[in-house]
Image 1 (cartoon, rainbow over the protein chains, first blue to last red):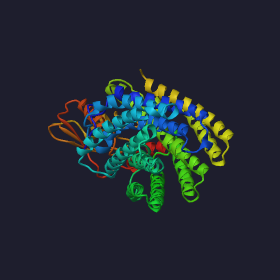
Image 2: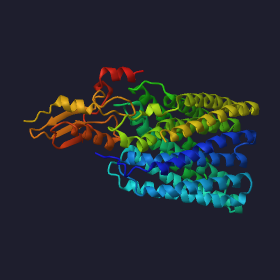
Image 3: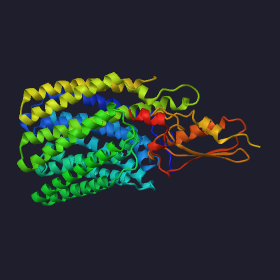
Image 4: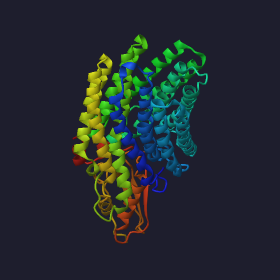
Length: 411
Length: 101
């Protein structure tokens, strides 16, 4: 038996900056898309800078904030030292701003930003791994969290070394190591983390029970194996090894999506709210990104790669994260402001703490935008891409107002 | 002689509402049993809809506080069990109907 006491759960004031900052980065990052020229390809520093702005400032910021709450839930023990989260977000914020500035304007500052990001992530890893040491119930999700955090460490160290190479000309084969950096962080950390957490969150919110979880177990093992083999292949320069690793990761993602289908079919809660719609859009995007990624492995068409990354980042990652914000933020606010009043006075239900209309607009604009811009990238139409981006910006605006509304509820 | 009955314990617990789904714990089928001793000590045997529920401790606390409001009650204990695992068939019809959309 376990419990998450109010004492071991992080204070709301500690976590809310992660959500505020993340949603601001999401909105500004969406606007910055208008200034990108996708036809320059994925080595364009403007695009690389945007990726770091978005992945660190939005995705990592919100994942870290969510993990502050979810780690105790997942591993069934309190944080090793939850106060460390007070210094994670300032380091990550300043590091991300510095790195983005470095990519866009002055590469000499890249290592300084990289160092701050590295420090914030090492602090996060330290707390997470020390917390995991206390866990007695080593579930699949716990194993996933351990593996993904170790991959994150390797991935950010590779990234930091590359930032030294870009700024000071250190002798590093960036073309070779860029793949390992991306695979370690996006495949090894973000995807594995999402796999692990979704096995807790999706059944919890959908009230799914009694389903077979072997597909995700296999998906987990294949993803871990694929990421490790990709890293080894990079070390030894095995192109065939990298190719095979990517195929293994593709199989892993396919099994994971099969698992999600099983959970969806066994859910007791049939209501189609903004969370369900966001999950549907996110997983559809993952399917589309996987197919495009597979095509790219065999064809090496740059447009296909750009479109695959777009659907992975703006489709899968963004919809999964934003969709869960509609669940996580009301819960945190309720926990902080209303749970002490239970039994003493009438308290709102979580559903009442959602901005339904704003969320509906956010979903519609974001969905249309992601689809149009992704097709624009695929067929090489800058106009269609920019047109889609304007919808994405509108969606991000609604998301920001929604986050503000939820965080301010009952203040 | 203790006058507390299983029904009165269930009635007391039915004032505790799961804020996520908006139903009380009894109609959700989460309360498995209430064991009442002659000394009026009460043990509530219950489960939760998911093992990873972040409200685990608070919900058990609310259940304890709800039962402690009964006249003449002694020590109240709440035991959370995972067998049998909860599923939607354990909920009352109004819950099933509402969740099914």
